[in-house]
Image 1 (cartoon, rainbow, N blue to C red):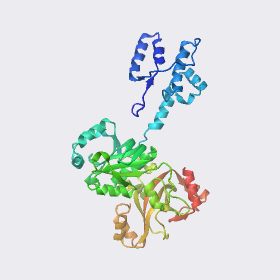
Image 2: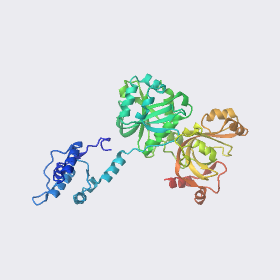
Image 3: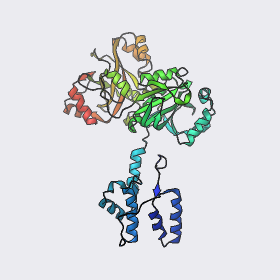
Length: 458
């Protein structure tokens, strides 16, 4: 982990002298040979903590700690309890680590949390080499003449990709991604710290319409959230791939300039992904679009509980943890999406864009499971109009929509924000005064009730 992330591992000359005192010749030789893997710390001043009366072992420990005191290195890793005791005496204890605490520190600094969603798989790039010569990559080669060499170079670097497979084992889509550090994405913009780069983003012709692009974005947002990455960016030919960049703009990406290495050919699109909610006055739906997964939930935003049957919940929310049985789902592709639709005959006539909806799974769980933000809400009476409005977002079939359209139908378009880490059962909801009983239709709740739900989640 240290080598992978640019940390230099040093050893102190005093350690070398200490090893040379080992009476076991084989062990001494093996241990000294391992030192060649590391860098020797040089030009160290005399340690003032040593006197003529200090024994050899204590003198070596003091010299090593004095190097830390002088800031010759950030920290010291040792299992020697005596050195840890001395470090405390010199006020250096926080900079002296055991192997375990050093590993924990590196994991906190650089550990990458992977994500798993139905219908996509996270794979090392080298595992796709046998597919590289296939038709799927032809369009990428057309736009980048050295694509195969670039692909294999990135595979050597250990890069990963999210992939979608068609049923016959053919690639359906790919999103190659990587964490970049202090990356200059345009001549004017350098992103401080780590950021998520989406290096290649393609959905095959046979997989289009299955919301694979949104599924890749869902993975990217989740990955950035778990790894506390505050920026996501991608660059490419916006004319050649205009449908991709239109989709990205709909999810808050903004064109910020051109990639310095492309001689002005590739536009750069950046999405800010702050760890903490920004204090910015935006309409609540726009706030979600630009700062997902953060959303406005102040008193000016209305909150509703929306009941949904288990069979529809299972299709719509395929990544709901309670039902994620397989990495690849045979259910409708609507569950791949972030943008979804809900149809009903609720008496509620007015719900505004940006309002919050809490989905209550009726039947088996009888609990609030998920949070969404309303994109639009309207009443339609013609089946064809409903189909045109919901497109591929809905779990309902055409016969079901025609049957529903016999009465004025509420059409809610929304974006899924997240599933609750712990579903909130009806008993809890009633005890907290959020509900008086099982909701039979869309039910408005107070701001205070929603905050109780949110505080329980946090």
